[in-house]
Length: 258
Image 1: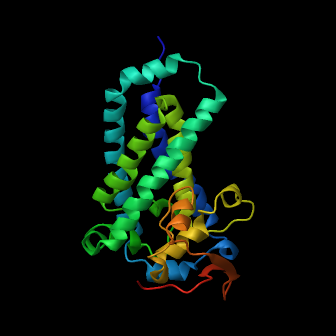
Image 2: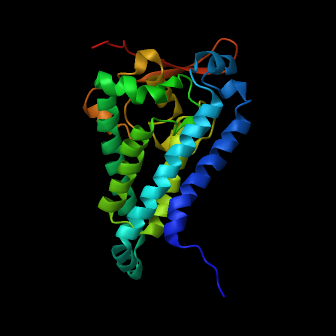
């Protein structure tokens, strides 16, 4: 008797496992002071929430995420089986990845930006994520449960549906998206990081957004910066050596309050 794990189960739980494994790598690398964007002292002093609370918040979001994923795979089961029956070319898989990335980026940019501009939503929902003034890897998905549902879970569902990807393809796409999100929040600028080579949206870019002067800029996540550039919310930055060791991302133009 064979016991296999379905693509649907892997598509649901693989990204969660990847989140904690990849975050664990960055926890081990966090002792490399010369590559940190903030010192450990700043992380302790500036952040407004304990690591225990962050872990509980992330686990809650991942529970909701898993429930929605199971429901989505159940509802789209027949379509997924038909897609799997076809021989998908590499070009088709690439197209699905790109469409999914663009859908997720577009959804998250406008929802994320609106949560900053609507004072009620920011105060009661999105400000929870910004309690991490100094981001770190396993805090990437620390959000208010409603924000986690709207931005990440529904955004992921839309990218899955509109790209036409199969559950098997979704295993790789959402695992990749998870790794990218964790990397953006890791608080490190490591030499040779391929994400920094291929994406302008990276840990330094997102660190600018988490600082008080940058909350009206750099809303794009997790892949591209196109919407920030198109709509004038792109904040360029430079990496400078920080006193006491490490690096610091500094804006290279004046931040406006309007």
